[in-house]
Length: 243
Ligand SMILES: [Zn+2]
Image (tube, rainbow, N blue to C red):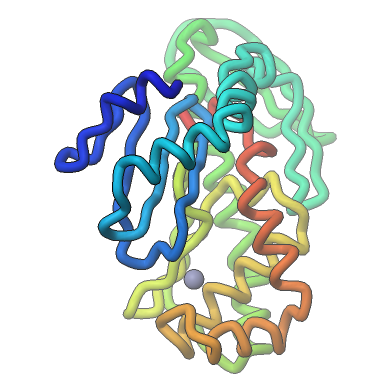
């Protein structure tokens, strides 16, 4: 790992082999994240000398490698899955497969059984079908709570967008459109609620100022712990969602 870092080029900001170094004007200190696909991103404040980056990486080398091994574990998330635990909704769906011709389709059967049928050897099609179903599930179940929380906060959100994203849990546009990640389905209900409060609070404060966090805290005093939980929350998301 250290050897790879020597490839770091301060101009290009890349370190080779799935490593990247990103300068962020908002970063106060160095930080590192390991993506599910095993890629490593080091975020550094502007004008951080390369030696500082090297020292930081050697300090955290063990942790980074441990995360990469975890990301590489091939059998952690079998495809097709045996079941889908949608913690946010308190639902567990058992998956049943029926191989046949044609594109992969997903049907809901009574008793929370999800029937996957079609060409199941087509990994890409299978992932697409499952992601599509999860996005529809999220859209159907997130809208009501989001509107209700909006009413508690005294704000009216615009359109709700649900997407399957690898890097962010949610966002709020200047026009009031709130975007939520379908991967939130795999988080605890409290965590989902916190993220909704977070995005709704952006309708009052389009920043992460003290006043913004004050607004969040008024509705969720435990926001710090929940925010931390969300950072770790990617581990709960099936690997095939993020590929
Ligand atoms: Zn925010």
